[in-house]
View 1 (cartoon, one colour):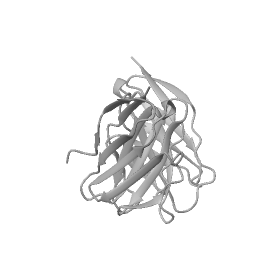
View 2 (cartoon, helix red, strand yellow; view 1 turned 90 degrees about the vertical axis):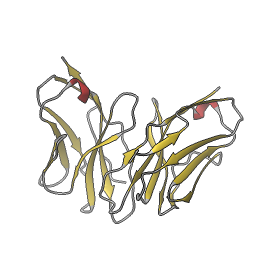
View 3 (cartoon, rainbow over the protein chains, first blue to last red; view 1 turned 60 degrees about the vertical axis):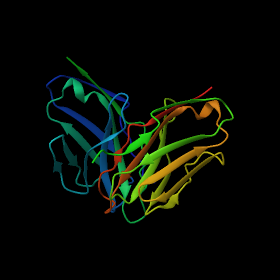
View 4 (spheres, each protein chain N blue to C red; view 1 turned 30 degrees about the vertical axis):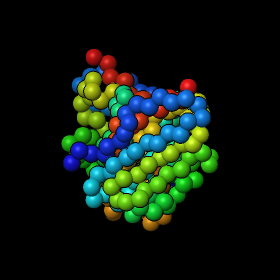
Length: 111
Length: 114
């Protein structure tokens, strides 16, 4: 399985933008980049995903490097409710649903 | 839709007993995943099903663990016999084709084996 590397933890101030990086240097051409987050005492929830182009939705933006070896999840204005563990995952469509979580990045949001 | 439903939410059992965890995926979803989460090992993928067929069970820790999906609306994860090291939160998730879509997770079952 292609692997991802994320910082263990990050800190942000409330109402400021947050950029969460992810490295995936061994990504293949068919891997989709997915981001999930897990709030305390809850199951993971979907945030965003993309293949090559940058993506925006109501929760966040996903910026994908031109060579696809890294990506950045952008929270435009962090709130206290965004404090969670954020996971960057590669999903390989043709070969099945390898949907494997790494340790993720624990985001703390300071008031 | 009520989302992915797991039961029970909490389970406390004695070592050696059989434990069955249940999952009802979202209607229409054709893929189902079972995960285990602990502080030490994080989120581990145990097994996943596609169209009720187990595709990859390489994450199942040992023969004491088994999973079934008798129909599209129900799956079970069974541990027999249970051991204290099986204590964890077990999550079920489901998603629909195509494969590049989001997966939805249940609230989890917190299992404690004493």
